[in-house]
Image 1 (cartoon, rainbow, N blue to C red):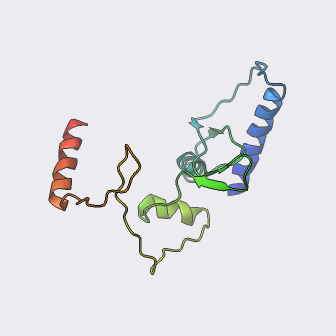
Image 2: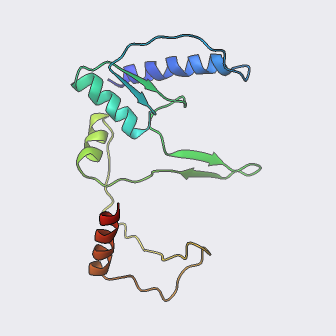
Image 3: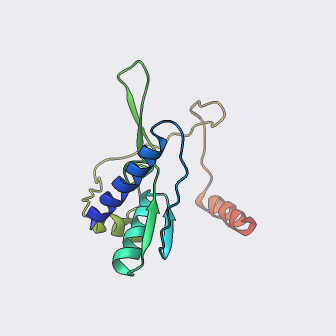
Length: 152
């Protein structure tokens, strides 16, 4: 199932690489007739492509600028150091479509059971930890979200 995704990405990546090898894009007329065009091969685009093609028999074209699918989580290598920083989506809520996504691609997930997370309250303007911060009550947070939903 994922074989066709890899072939599609390699084909698109080869085309884009050839077109931009000299730093300029040479216009070339390519006509593809598909039911759906998906822009972006991140988690959502990849899953949409698989669902449309495999489950709903829909012809698709997936356009992704990177040589691999999955999106969001990337690694930044800090110049002149041996330090790498992973950034982007690195967690998910194990519910419905998120769980289906991993199951679909045969990716095992482990939910840590004995790892306890500690919340840090940070001032977003200064980056300093707020020592005497008191979080709003659940009722106050829910009321604020209800007001926000009414506005949006």
